[in-house]
Image (cartoon, helix red, strand yellow):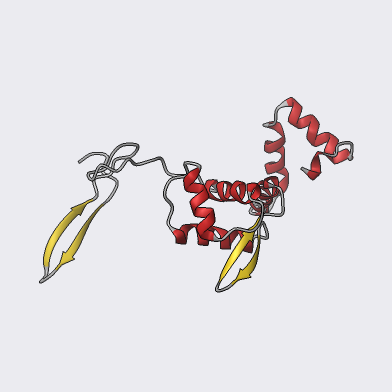
Length: 162
Protein backbone atom coordinates (compact mmCIF):
# COMPACT_ATOMS: atom_id res chain seq x y z
CA UNK A 1 0.00 0.00 0.00
CA UNK A 2 2.55 2.58 -1.02
CA UNK A 3 1.52 6.19 -0.58
CA UNK A 4 -0.91 5.47 2.22
CA UNK A 5 -0.74 8.36 4.63
CA UNK A 6 -2.35 6.82 7.67
CA UNK A 7 -3.37 3.44 8.97
CA UNK A 8 -4.74 2.61 12.38
CA UNK A 9 -5.86 -0.43 14.23
CA UNK A 10 -9.14 0.23 15.99
CA UNK A 11 -10.59 -1.86 18.75
CA UNK A 12 -14.21 -2.74 18.00
CA UNK A 13 -16.82 -4.38 20.17
CA UNK A 14 -15.79 -7.49 22.12
CA UNK A 15 -12.07 -7.10 21.62
CA UNK A 16 -12.16 -7.87 17.92
CA UNK A 17 -9.70 -5.88 15.88
CA UNK A 18 -10.51 -4.05 12.74
CA UNK A 19 -7.76 -2.67 10.60
CA UNK A 20 -8.77 0.68 9.23
CA UNK A 21 -6.87 2.31 6.43
CA UNK A 22 -8.10 5.68 5.37
CA UNK A 23 -6.58 5.13 1.94
CA UNK A 24 -5.83 8.77 1.27
CA UNK A 25 -2.91 9.31 -1.01
CA UNK A 26 -1.01 12.57 -1.19
CA UNK A 27 -2.47 14.76 -3.91
CA UNK A 28 -4.96 12.10 -4.99
CA UNK A 29 -8.29 10.63 -4.09
CA UNK A 30 -8.96 8.66 -0.98
CA UNK A 31 -10.77 5.36 -0.66
CA UNK A 32 -14.07 7.19 -0.22
CA UNK A 33 -13.66 9.34 -3.32
CA UNK A 34 -12.80 12.58 -1.51
CA UNK A 35 -10.21 14.66 -3.30
CA UNK A 36 -7.26 15.40 -1.08
CA UNK A 37 -5.58 18.78 -1.39
CA UNK A 38 -2.04 19.64 -0.48
CA UNK A 39 -1.47 20.56 3.14
CA UNK A 40 -1.28 24.29 3.86
CA UNK A 41 2.16 25.70 4.43
CA UNK A 42 2.88 27.00 7.95
CA UNK A 43 1.16 30.31 8.49
CA UNK A 44 -0.98 30.02 5.35
CA UNK A 45 -4.25 29.72 7.27
CA UNK A 46 -3.34 32.79 9.34
CA UNK A 47 -2.68 34.70 6.14
CA UNK A 48 -5.97 33.57 4.55
CA UNK A 49 -7.93 34.51 7.67
CA UNK A 50 -6.27 37.92 7.84
CA UNK A 51 -7.14 38.55 4.19
CA UNK A 52 -10.81 37.72 4.92
CA UNK A 53 -10.82 40.02 7.96
CA UNK A 54 -9.22 42.86 6.00
CA UNK A 55 -11.81 42.61 3.24
CA UNK A 56 -14.71 42.62 5.71
CA UNK A 57 -16.60 45.80 6.47
CA UNK A 58 -16.66 45.00 10.19
CA UNK A 59 -15.85 42.38 12.81
CA UNK A 60 -16.69 38.77 11.91
CA UNK A 61 -17.62 35.72 13.93
CA UNK A 62 -15.54 32.56 13.47
CA UNK A 63 -18.46 31.00 11.58
CA UNK A 64 -18.56 33.94 9.16
CA UNK A 65 -14.79 33.72 8.65
CA UNK A 66 -15.12 29.97 7.98
CA UNK A 67 -17.90 30.53 5.42
CA UNK A 68 -15.95 33.26 3.60
CA UNK A 69 -12.83 31.07 3.48
CA UNK A 70 -14.90 28.27 1.99
CA UNK A 71 -16.39 30.67 -0.58
CA UNK A 72 -12.87 31.68 -1.62
CA UNK A 73 -11.91 28.09 -2.30
CA UNK A 74 -10.13 27.63 1.00
CA UNK A 75 -11.64 24.18 1.43
CA UNK A 76 -13.78 22.95 4.26
CA UNK A 77 -12.23 23.86 7.56
CA UNK A 78 -13.46 22.79 10.96
CA UNK A 79 -14.98 25.50 13.10
CA UNK A 80 -12.42 24.72 15.82
CA UNK A 81 -9.50 25.24 13.39
CA UNK A 82 -10.79 28.73 12.60
CA UNK A 83 -11.42 29.56 16.29
CA UNK A 84 -7.97 28.31 17.27
CA UNK A 85 -6.27 30.36 14.56
CA UNK A 86 -8.26 33.48 15.43
CA UNK A 87 -7.42 33.05 19.11
CA UNK A 88 -3.72 32.71 18.33
CA UNK A 89 -3.80 35.78 16.09
CA UNK A 90 -5.45 37.69 18.94
CA UNK A 91 -2.78 36.50 21.40
CA UNK A 92 -0.12 37.75 18.97
CA UNK A 93 -1.81 41.15 18.87
CA UNK A 94 -2.53 40.89 15.15
CA UNK A 95 -6.33 40.95 15.40
CA UNK A 96 -8.76 42.49 17.84
CA UNK A 97 -11.86 40.86 19.23
CA UNK A 98 -15.02 42.02 20.93
CA UNK A 99 -17.63 40.09 22.87
CA UNK A 100 -20.83 39.30 21.03
CA UNK A 101 -23.06 37.28 23.31
CA UNK A 102 -21.16 34.16 24.34
CA UNK A 103 -18.76 34.37 21.40
CA UNK A 104 -16.28 36.85 19.95
CA UNK A 105 -16.19 38.83 16.74
CA UNK A 106 -12.78 39.48 15.21
CA UNK A 107 -11.29 42.32 13.16
CA UNK A 108 -7.87 42.98 11.65
CA UNK A 109 -7.01 46.63 12.20
CA UNK A 110 -3.38 46.27 11.09
CA UNK A 111 -2.01 45.63 7.63
CA UNK A 112 -1.14 41.99 6.74
CA UNK A 113 2.49 43.06 6.48
CA UNK A 114 2.54 43.42 10.28
CA UNK A 115 2.00 39.68 10.70
CA UNK A 116 4.89 38.94 8.35
CA UNK A 117 7.11 41.41 10.22
CA UNK A 118 6.09 39.79 13.52
CA UNK A 119 7.07 36.35 12.15
CA UNK A 120 10.42 37.68 10.95
CA UNK A 121 11.13 39.20 14.38
CA UNK A 122 10.15 35.94 16.10
CA UNK A 123 12.55 33.97 13.89
CA UNK A 124 15.32 36.48 14.46
CA UNK A 125 14.76 36.43 18.23
CA UNK A 126 15.23 32.65 18.22
CA UNK A 127 18.93 33.20 17.46
CA UNK A 128 21.34 34.53 20.07
CA UNK A 129 23.58 36.21 17.50
CA UNK A 130 21.55 38.30 15.07
CA UNK A 131 24.48 39.38 12.87
CA UNK A 132 24.86 36.15 10.82
CA UNK A 133 21.11 35.86 10.32
CA UNK A 134 20.75 39.45 9.15
CA UNK A 135 23.86 39.12 6.96
CA UNK A 136 22.43 36.10 5.16
CA UNK A 137 19.02 37.74 4.89
CA UNK A 138 20.40 40.93 3.35
CA UNK A 139 22.69 39.05 0.97
CA UNK A 140 19.68 37.11 -0.35
CA UNK A 141 17.67 40.23 -1.21
CA UNK A 142 17.23 41.51 -4.72
CA UNK A 143 19.03 44.74 -5.57
CA UNK A 144 15.74 46.63 -5.40
CA UNK A 145 14.81 45.23 -1.98
CA UNK A 146 18.31 45.90 -0.68
CA UNK A 147 17.99 49.53 -1.81
CA UNK A 148 14.56 49.74 -0.13
CA UNK A 149 16.01 48.49 3.16
CA UNK A 150 18.82 51.03 2.87
CA UNK A 151 16.30 53.87 2.31
CA UNK A 152 14.11 52.69 5.21
CA UNK A 153 17.10 52.61 7.56
CA UNK A 154 18.00 56.15 6.50
CA UNK A 155 14.40 57.30 6.89
CA UNK A 156 14.11 58.25 3.22
CA UNK A 157 11.03 56.16 2.41
CA UNK A 158 7.48 56.18 3.70
CA UNK A 159 6.83 52.50 2.78
CA UNK A 160 7.04 51.54 6.44
CA UNK A 161 3.39 52.52 6.96
CA UNK A 162 2.09 49.91 4.48
